[in-house]
Image 1 (cartoon, rainbow, N blue to C red):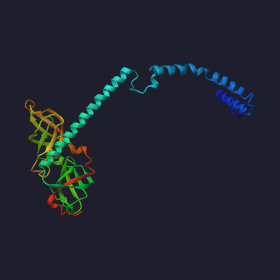
Image 2 (image 1 turned 90 degrees about the horizontal axis):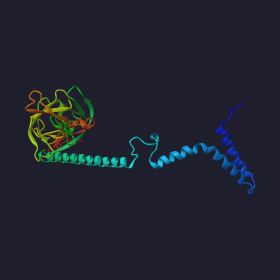
Image 3 (image 1 turned 90 degrees about the vertical axis):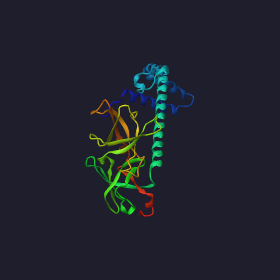
Image 4 (image 1 turned 180 degrees about the vertical axis):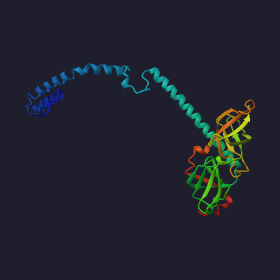
Amino acid sequence: MPAPLLSSQRLLLAIAGALVINSQLPSSVAGLPGKVLTLVVDFATLPLRGPVYSLATDLAQGDAPPEFVHPGTPTTIEELRDAYAQSLVKIDRLEQANDQLKQQLELIEGVRNIDAPDTRPLTAKVTAYRDPGPRQVLTLNRGSRQGIRSGMTVVYKTVLVGRVVEPVGPSNSNVELVTGHDGGLQVRVRQDGYAEPFDNIRVRPSETDDEYFVAEVPKDSPIRTGALVLLADVVNYADAPGFLLGVVEQKIDYTPDPELLDQLQIRLALFDTPFRKEVAVLLPESDEGDANP
């Protein structure tokens, strides 16, 4: 036995039947079912007219119910003005941050171009990555056939990554990250608002976090958060002065002597690069004709 029709289904069948009958009637009386159909539709939609009219009025007056308003969307002129003003402030901050990044990049490029010896970067793919504590090691797909030798500096664009260590094979080589450098490194610090860098600062690996170096400075030092730390070590990285080591992330009291010294906590910039995929080895320009592809 077929299931009984719902009231809505019956109404649709009635409307369809009226349309069929209307199409078969002579033109002189064809308007009659149309008038009947109009009455039926008006009667069927009568309960909906009040809520629809009320909702349309609320939308037009800006008093839409919560379910019709996206969270955070301004619903009044005052809120719209506030949102516009906040957007302008955010845009201004983004523009200032972009300008600061441009200035930092220009400083890095300027120092590197002045101080760096004649070298050329040899791009190499990273084929393996080992992380035995602080002595993190990369394996590259380039070796002695391409002119790579132990002690050469490895970078990612303007950022220091580490240096080549033994053994160096004909077509592969190992790179120890700068995190494994036991001794201190000589650096210079570029601080916004100061034309000259701060020299004679020595940094060392943090004892608590492999991604940081630290350095102590006098309590009255103007160096603060955001300063750039550039390599200036002619002993360990003689071919890479001016490359970016990291950025000062915090300046805190130096616990052993908090009244006289502050400690800079420097996050290494290499951890903000895709160094596990590709790096570049700095080869002397004089070796250009000797390296094999």
